[in-house]
Length: 127
Image 1 (spheres, helix red, strand yellow):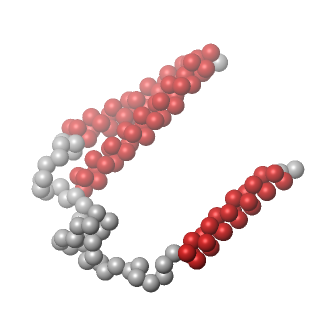
Image 2 (image 1 turned 90 degrees about the vertical axis):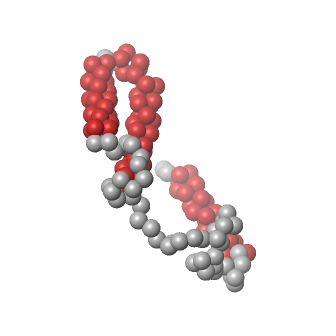
Image 3 (image 1 turned 180 degrees about the horizontal axis):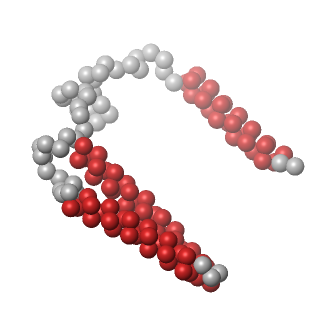
């Protein structure tokens, strides 16, 4: 019944295992470990402590950027199918859902903006 799908899955799995095995055979085994103070891929020597605390504001700005990037992707997918939904009689439901989605985004942006979380200031004590 699903024999072609099972065959493809097994073939892909076999190829992955074979590539891992061949990679284990050809990669160098000695001299791979670098000290923690060694140079990185850029060739620059490491300076300072290897573990630093990331400021909370940096994490918040990254989260807001990620949120709005994913939201833009979702809105793009909705924009592609909105005409078909209207033709199928789902226009009001889509409009209500899209309005709620955009309202939540605007309210969250206004909240972050009102708390002054989107302004980047060095050493503002929010870490």
